[in-house]
Length: 135
Image 1 (cartoon, rainbow, N blue to C red):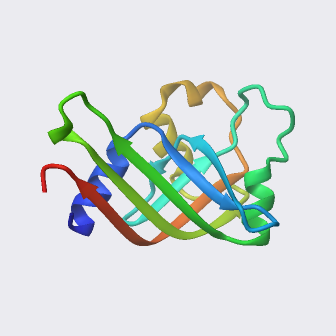
Image 2 (cartoon, rainbow, N blue to C red; image 1 turned 90 degrees about the vertical axis):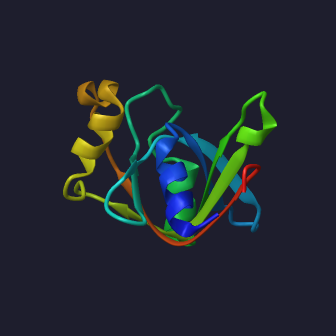
């Protein structure tokens, strides 16, 4: 799979899995919503959905070690349609909102228009790999 195809497939998925690194070196994985914010750049935000706290483990992990991985995949009963993409990169926590970030997320997820958003996670993708049954 070419990097361009991998990028297109990654950003076509409404939800992916974000993996950060816990203090003991183990992966911490959570589903997350995101949008492209330029080429090979992703943005996500903490939203108002119910959480025990807005001080999330993923944010603590990124502050300590900014290396992250994003995994998106497509499953179908027709196994010729299977694929996955893994994006590795460096994340940062940003406040205030990065330019265009709110619009990018609201365009993709209209319920965000009713939410207070932030802090923001910005991921600079450094490496994209993928696999497709059709290739």
